[in-house]
Image (cartoon, rainbow, N blue to C red):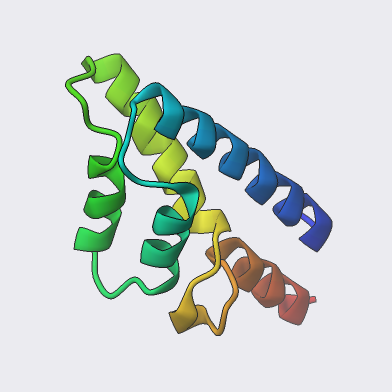
Length: 99
């Protein structure tokens, strides 16, 4: 089980990786755009929208890495529907209640 500190550390690492990837793909979007979409998510299309920010004709291997990173962002970045927490923080809360 991760601690709140470990979740925060992982979030920072994901932010760094996303920022680097945005530069590599010469995306018109920034890290805050990704955070905003995730925070205000309404349906599954929002995840697709974030993934599309990085799509510049890479191969399957590179897209797989991008999908994994976007999925990590989805799980570690805050969501409005979760009262400003991320899914990993909600899981941590649930695990603590089970003890």
